[in-house]
Length: 148
Image (cartoon, rainbow, N blue to C red):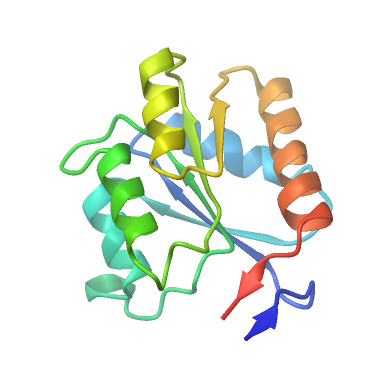
């Protein structure tokens, strides 16, 4: 067992079916110091396959953090969150809900399902940069991430 060192790129798995949201966050991280590899799963089924390195994802890296949208086809964000946090191999991966929903019940369910954070999406690019920098500053600078 090791602690993550900054000797390799920071790996982010973004689970989101909206290409605009994906593009915005990828571009926003380009404004952050450091090297980021952002992988995308467009629904919950693909996300679990990515994490388990199944099918087309057989060489997928273990993400350092997960950005998880709630509203997706086939398997929604709550289902993915429950599955990730129930699996001893993945529960240590910080999982941030990244969604447009600010419904109190969604927030309650997310935290009760062991989400590590809840971030409201923005379509404003400057706001996306602030979000990316906040994620970078906390998760990739202040925090020590676990790396098996």
